View (cartoon, rainbow, N blue to C red):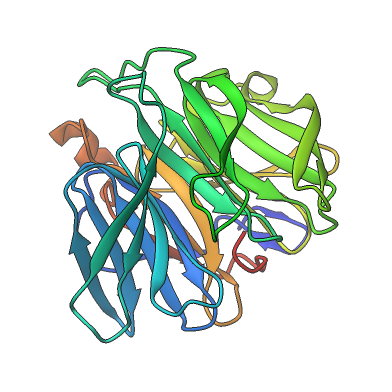
Length: 313
């Protein structure tokens, strides 16, 4: 019998891979509702991907790429995090050519840092975070990252450091009323919540919203999205699951098991926003773990959950 919470169908949901390709470090899924395209990155393979009309295509870049976010009103134009450089990528649908323009660089005094997760708020301000260098064993120096906000897309120099001293800046989400911003700094094993002011696009009054210790959750939180009910879906890195957490009570509503241990990020997509897209990581995974988690490194589409997402969140 399927385990359900209200109308949510965790065990009965259908999970399929969107393509045969195995990602080394799949991350940052973004659903373009205007064109029905899924974008995501492979950080360590230096690639931006798009899945469009059942075709998987990619752009090869010259450094770690942390995120890809479309620029509103500019068809085929994206902001990307390339190393610690903020850049634009021009990559039109049905065209194989692309152009990268580097705009500005952050964390110049922190060699080895790179951009990680990012998202635009409802005002169109880009929030993007950095992290320190991750060695082969997965060790990351604490406190070397920063969450930045890009205030003005006509002047890409105005990157404002909002939260210094984070370790691995990760998932972001805003509630429907634009009064709350949820945020993940992965090693804390917590989801923080801030008061969010939509007029000034500013945050205040940080609190711990959900702590992995509460329900003995393994691993750490990674990417995150929010559904139309205002509840959070949190990628559980090293936990082989996506957590469903109430956006109001902070109670764990359920767990969606994923056949990959290193679950990196999630977003809702599909024409009805009723599919959950999940990125996973194969870097550092042993052959034994591949046998145990056969969809390791795949980008997955989950259907039949009974939940819809919100646009671009």
